Image 1 (tube, rainbow, N blue to C red):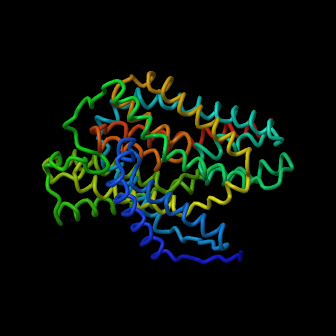
Image 2 (tube, rainbow, N blue to C red; image 1 turned 135 degrees about the horizontal axis):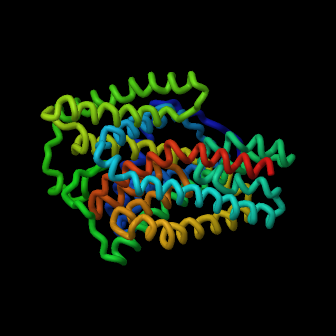
Length: 404
């Protein structure tokens, strides 16, 4: 075996991401079980690509390092689109579900770290390392794991903390992409649930039944959506700089989401008869492409060999975390959120969010709503929780545990 690393430039990474997305769509079209369990198309293609790269690494030592600048921009585009879809009435009606989801998310953060601490001690790690087996890497994702790993290492004297955090976050992202769809299928089909407002527009993606998409998609609707997305991103960049000046650090997609909300609702108030942008098939299509390409690139760039190097501990602890997440979603979150169709869609999203990241959660919900019907409020509530609340709550809990 020879050790070799090839740098893949940004444009080629984006091109490969689109190809991987299309491969996933083709496989899903041919394999019924993937559709039945609502596995998103970019998940199918992305995981296939990541396992192919794992095979290359294990057999010939070839490692591909992807420039992911385009991927990160697509995430900003996607969340700007989520903002453009947010109606003031939905934000008001989503108040109670939002508060409930905040409480449930905090409970999940605490429980994940408890499971992580028990598992860490059982396998000879310091108890504080439980946050790297818990919320720092799972709900927090790769960025939070990388940010907190050095502090865990400094407090405990543990070596390889960053590698551990990245490996847990990587496996969590894979599991997150796989559990949400089956959870939704179990709840929706098992309980005979249907959308409260089946005629609502789809927030992300077009329905699987093309006859349901009555409004047209043409060059004017696409250009109109792109203009408003660009405006949301431009003002989002400006808001991000203002936020940075206060010393508060937020991901760029958060201010872009905020400005999307502002632009959409100001537009409705000022020009109610203007051609629509929010909840249009054109915006849904662009949002689905942005999310799908982002997720395909994220999954194909996973370095799965980092998981294999950690052996039994990561497998056992992540199995426990997955069982907890699934049980919590089915027996706690679903009934608390109302035991209805929207609760089932949020369950699919929360399964992805608890183990992986917000884009994975949205991809899970998209796959579910494309098959069973729309749930617009779910697409507002979950991103707001993940964008504003999680980083702050997670930081407080992690800091408390690490310094205990």
